[in-house]
Image (cartoon, rainbow, N blue to C red):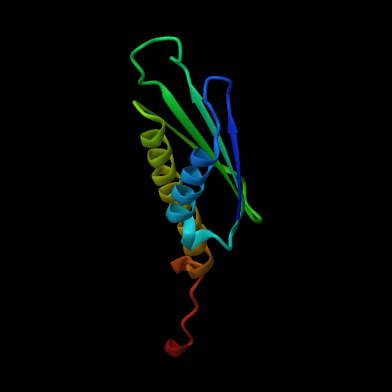
Length: 122
């Protein structure tokens, strides 16, 4: 699983931030690692000019092999909270999407009652 980190001009990107993002995303998505080819991380602070933070945003987009991308975002007071919130949302979204797909594969076809033929009554 490849993790690409993108920041806007209001976020100072450094190795500590990259390490934190990688560890949070890998921890949240470790059980899906073989199915995910890439995770795009977009970090921004919409209120960077104001003294009261609170609009830090983390948007995550997972590229799952053979499926449509799944994207989530989280806004929080701190960047770390936004990253953790988005990672948890993405984990639930992938679990839900892959769970639905898996259950469709294992659900037997339902045959309407009118089409059922019972040979034992003849």
